[in-house]
Length: 274
Image 1 (cartoon, helix red, strand yellow):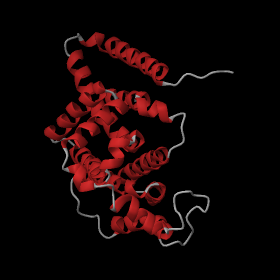
Image 2 (image 1 turned 90 degrees about the horizontal axis):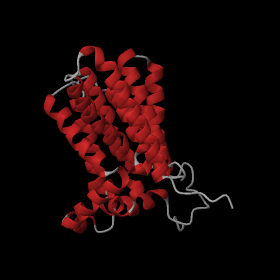
Image 3 (image 1 turned 135 degrees about the horizontal axis):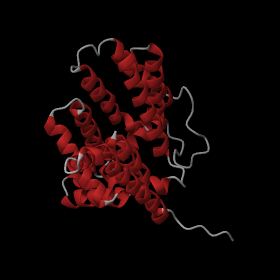
């Protein structure tokens, strides 16, 4: 579909995605595991196979183990279930138990079934549970930051730097379209938005001072922006006779691909062969 092509091109051209393609950050693992889990969960909801549910649980479990704060993203598969089934009935007990199973690796790490990396320079002899409490629950002046208008301004600036102003505008427009139309994906987009809003509210210092903390926003921003792009393309093709639709869509796809390649060229840091 137009939306699928647009989302793929967008997520590959975001400045933060290009920058992180030459860096190693935990957020990359979080996103990879999250998208794998979401894919297999969607396959499970369509086909009903147990093995795809197990694969989804493995993906979400790895996501949580990579970064505990990624737990907010579990609202996305909840929204996907709601979108596919049209109701939240049927979650218990099967899917509730799967959710608990996803958290087992993280809980085992927190209670030291296996140790924190002994080479870490950050743990200072503290347990994993204490580290998690200090880094996440006792966030740097959370309530002071959330009560300050500058925090929200810096958050928007951080997102603009990471994703580009036009992408954010398309994301806002596309998300508004999805939520207002009441279509099949309304619950998915709504739950996903709530997840990332909570992510900001819990980590206001991190998300306004470190761009890589906003990387988990990439798939949702791409999906929202792609929805707006899809609407614009479909509205535009209505102005062209039916026989010309393939040519218009092919031209737009080629222009988008060239724009993506140019974005990579512009964002990627220069390398010296010396």
